[in-house]
Length: 567
Ligand code: ADP
Ligand code: MG
Image 1 (cartoon, rainbow, N blue to C red):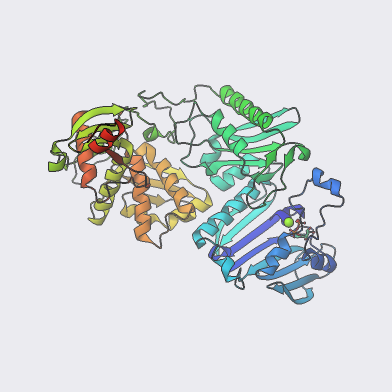
Image 2 (cartoon, rainbow, N blue to C red; image 1 turned 90 degrees about the horizontal axis):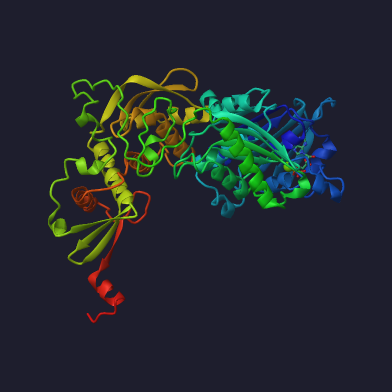
């Protein structure tokens, strides 16, 4: 793609199968190559892009090393077809595992088509470093999106296993391209930004206050149009939103930093996308100031994150407000109109809501009677720093991480409900509309049945448009769209593979448990003991679904040793 863009392509098509391992084709309508150039392009370090050493500092193309084509040709079956616009015919070069098979004339449209098959087939040792097809495919998709964002004027088509994942015509503006790739809803959540100062220019789109994601992958940054993964830029963005986003949530943005090529080092590993700025501090403070200023300007009553314990039922909060994820929020769940399940209790009744009410939810489950025998003699001492519950036990002292414990309890409960066919789902009176980008749509379409079986019933009603018709009983309808996006983000990372229902079910339960747990700020002795009881009734009480420890014990012996008492 970089080569295609360097060649001035206004149209690029990428097709792949099996995460690219069996087939990958990139086709463009760029300048094309003569027969001689085509052969030369496959020689190592033959680049047409640097004419003098000094050019390295004045780089305005993506490529400059002349390594990509020969490297790929050496480890796959590689076919290059190319034709200059003014040439009557094109050239075809076929290379297999680095060996030239043929060069001949061919009929082809002006531009360049590169087809790579049998990737690493001659180098099995390397092949095993490829991740699952789903992961590799996610990488390909992500890369195509990045370049599509970097070059809105170029039309892009991405095809996986014969299915068009996305197709974007040439766009006049970045925001149009963002809407094409991520959907109109996402685009509407963004603010345009453009600031120039001391040879630095920052432009692009940033999330309105309150817009956040569970993962970082929608913080997208470019330096001189090159997609980068820069700690400096990521942290600057996160810091700019520090006071307006809850813990554990990330801002969104598509940001382009432009600067003199002399002030930035891009000559690092191409796949890692690292950059080094000559002056990190200058870049950082410039970005923070630019973003903060924009956020302030836009502060026309925009929802600011409520403080801990603040009630958050304002109707102006966008549906994407992560109500349930604030640590320690003890606000009542917003009253929402839900239609009764046929034959069930009215769901907006206190009992119907109890499962999703913030509070010691697991404690309100039927199993929370008296602690079992071995916990009967536990004594709750209190909480430390909010998160940790302390108990005195006959054997010593137990410190329990309340969140980790709640998540474990929920995780097993959700799995059990599923296995027993008792997933509780609530039809919504008003279906929640969701617009997705084409990739998320494709991922979702493959998982509609899976989600429905887990209580999230989503219907398709138009290209990339969906409606959430029913939600599991542990989530508020307001939070459902965001949860769906989080689920699809996991799917995109290959963590919700519909081919492996067991693993997918676990991943679902893990995400759901995180969402379902709303930790009350304080806990009573009864609730704390109930939580401990439920935790130890779990199959795997020692770790949270994410693998963190749930508790540890300091034995009386440990205590005695620490205080150097004779035992
Ligand atoms: P680099 O991009 O660093 O120069 P590559 O190995 O990626 O090295 O490509 C080698 C050369 O092949 C390029 O310098 C360019 O001249 C030519 N080339 C590669 N792909 C294309 C393309 N899609 N269209 C036109 N020329 C291309
Ligand atoms: Mg290149």
